[in-house]
Length: 248
Image 1 (cartoon, rainbow, N blue to C red):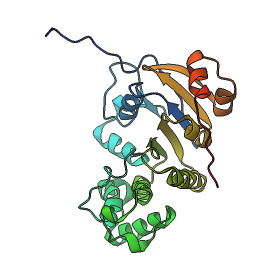
Image 2 (image 1 turned 90 degrees about the horizontal axis):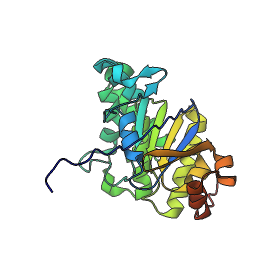
Image 3 (image 1 turned 120 degrees about the vertical axis):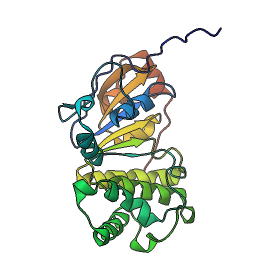
Image 4 (image 1 turned 90 degrees about the vertical axis):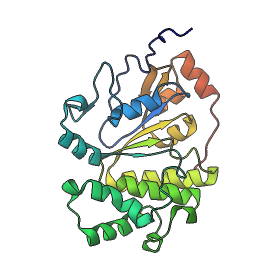
């Protein structure tokens, strides 16, 4: 009863490559290993085996200074915009915080940070008049826009999008998805989109991987996966998928 618990492999033999400038979707049920993989990419968890490479560099071999510089280039947008923002900080403080953390990379002074924060808010559909407000003064969709602005503050190349629309109303989901598409076109971003919502992944992503209980089930071009799934698990998931209509 009180013996050692059996070791559980959260991820088993997964090999995924994400190309610069693409939107890659990772789909799986709760407990499939999506969160473990995301935390490993962010170097918040150390894999017991295998490697995670960024531009050919193994994250496990990076020095502390190299890892800090990497984190300026890889940012995340979390699922819950209500829990992701410090209620005691103004929007200006929230959006400029990554610029302070990565001051050695960005080299922005106080006035430059404020100007950049205003630019980022405009980029996500808000405005400089929102800088002095607090998170509780915004709707869920607006809060997620603030989270996206914060993620962009360090000038990243790769965004990890962890279920970024699942906590939002359906109409607001469409707005945020369109914003993400527009930002990718403007900024040349690479997206690693983590979700259990196949319809959203089909809309946003050019390639997709399905994982189940820590194992890669199927991977390929989004159109091929959804139109002609090869595995029984993929066929079951896609057969149960609702339709989504996102006005552009």
